[in-house]
Amino acid sequence: MGKIVEIKGLSKRYINTIALNGIDLDIENGKVVGVLGPNGSGKTTLIKILAGLLRQSKGDVRIDSHNVGVYTKSIVSYLPDRNFLYSWMSIDDALKFYSDFYKDFDIKRAENLLDFMNLDKNLKVNQLSKGMHEKLNLRLVLSRRAKLYILDEPIAGVDPVARDKILDAIINNYNEDSSMIITTHLVRDMENLFDEVVFLKEGNIILRGDAEKLREEKKKSIDELYKEIFGE
Amino acid sequence: MYYIYSTLIYNDNGGEIVEFTDQLPIYIQIMNYIKKKIITSELKGGDKLPSVRELSYELKVNPNTVQRSYQELERENLVYTQRGMGTFVIEDQNVLTNLRKEMAQSIIDKFVKEMKEIGFSYDEIVEILENRRTEEK
Image 1 (cartoon, each protein chain N blue to C red):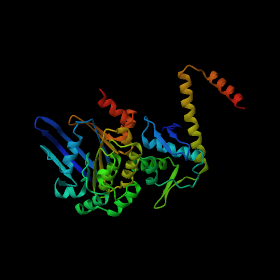
Image 2: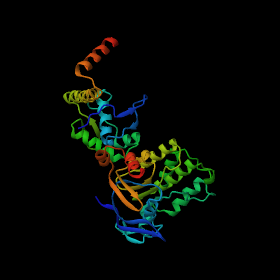
Image 3: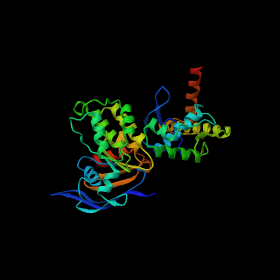
Image 4: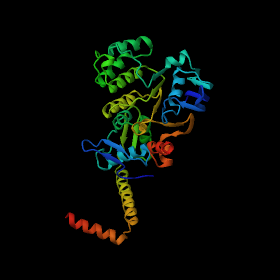
């Protein structure tokens, strides 16, 4: 099995804080990896580096054997943790916007997902509730035929019904040829999706492993493990 | 090997899983879920299991996990896979009877262990069961 992501000695400093402190991380093709950690642990920094929005201070990051750049952006579909659409857009505009931007955008798939999530095409972005926003953004991101999906807090702040829809969409979208990196601190809701989990604390990876093996070894759910690690 | 009977919590309409418990790996819980369906004859010998994708969707778990459950069930000779067709429950009646016995065994093990932990002897356990039987008649 090939590796979609290879990270060696990755560090990121902001003027006087260290966000990532020399981490090593490989991700195999076809895996769903949960990156877990509290606020300020470095999750979003890591993801922004992978998405090409930030540059590392030190270290090596390769995606599909390429350095982060134009090519990797074309195969990485990234869901930011905040809204990225203009408020004047209707849902239909947003679809067109995305299909203009990305060659691998599958408009049919987007429209199927649209029905699935009960979103009306004519609604304006600024009329959407937080849950609908989240669903729309996710739909756009999942409708690309990408090799790597990076979802930053995909279910933060949505109600349980919308959350289930979002989980369904993620599962439906899964296939062996693409990988996913998902950050969350809502571990209980998402842990069953993960093949592997990575615990980040203050810029270091303090634990990583196969989710099932960890459950077996520790006799704990990933959620309990999370509370144990970050609880004190 | 684990055989814990009620690791999954069901709701009444159609036996969908509502929740997983914490202590066991998910793939084992899914195996138990299918074993239970086999034991209660909800799935009979020769029946097709839901596809990996269907089940992962229904249970909201990673398809790789469901895949692993199916592989393990196959290794335990409870199901077989036909390429391009799907996964089926084995038709050997002996295997199914054994499965039923094994599961009963594990429920009893757990029950006896817990009763002993709260200080009951075998005689007392039997007595309680006898009383219960009379009551239910």
